Amino acid sequence: MPASRLTVVVTRRLPEVVETRLKELFDVELRDPDQPMTREELAAAMRRADVLVPTITDTIDAGLLAQAGEKLKLIANYGAGFDHIDVATARQRGILVSNTPGVSTEDTADMVMALMLAVVRHIPEGLHLIKSGGWTGWSPMANLGGRLGGRRLGILGMGRIGQAVARRARAFGLQVHYHNRKRLRPEIEAEHEATWWESLDQMLARVDIVSVNCPHTPSTFHLLNARRLKLMKPSAVVVNTSRGEVIDQNALTRALRAGELAGAGLDVYEHGTDINPRLVDLPNVVLLPHMGSATLEGRIEMGEKVIINIKTFADGHRPPDQVVPGMY
Image 1 (cartoon, rainbow, N blue to C red):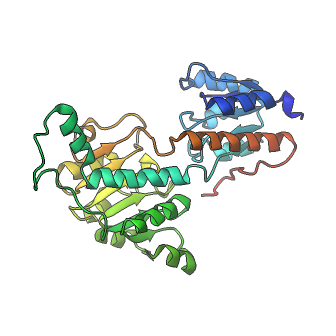
Image 2 (spheres, rainbow, N blue to C red):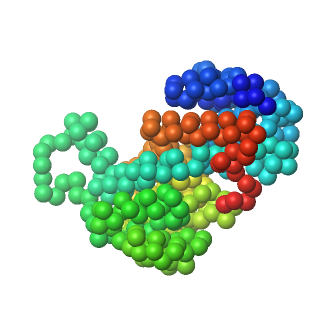
Image 3 (cartoon, rainbow, N blue to C red):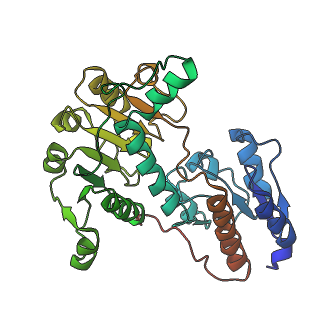
């Protein structure tokens, strides 16, 4: 199948340099304006495309895949996460799925540290004081936050991003602890000076900050539930830049409102943009609109990976970032 004849449908606007390269290589349909496709639009796109390039805003389930045309042979996801795609059903229908792993590792790890600092040092409160005109001058006891150095950080999920967080955490003087499905090799543990906890419950009871860096799978859904949140210190902070479903959002809101946790920094939410209003109103939380991977450099690299996956497929080979059902 010649690459020039591939019909590629892109569901959202991408950086101009990526769109230009796609147009050079394929018969591409770009999205304008930049709005998520409706389910009906997605179904229509899947009927006319050889390759669909969706994002996390596109839920591609078994029902939608059943409406796909015979042409569709590759879903080249723009992003590392793929829990919005029914990969097993796609495979059964002869449709390959690829993603863009590793691209957002450093950017997301940067955001983890930004959220830690923002929550522990009360940066939003300080910003609000300035913008509201409420700052009347320096005082020894005003705007007191805490020091990161010396605190225990518990990393939930020690994959690429978790390890990138660990590297940064050591530079800030944090003690690194982690819980993972499998213990890391001794040399990697030594590199990060990281302590492994086989029991998540025991780790949560002992750390000062928890960073969620694991994927959303059936086994990680509500991994931080009401019971586990109660195990944490009242002075502890929770940071999540991974997937919102890993934390029971309502249980977290109750814990924060009751003073059972000191604060939270969240970039992802259990129900997408539908955030509990009681959580939004809390002064001890920092909430961001899924910005963890939002750098221009990262977005361009993601696009380059998508193009490589499509081009490799068009040349008759397996995409280098093909997703296999059950790989996580």
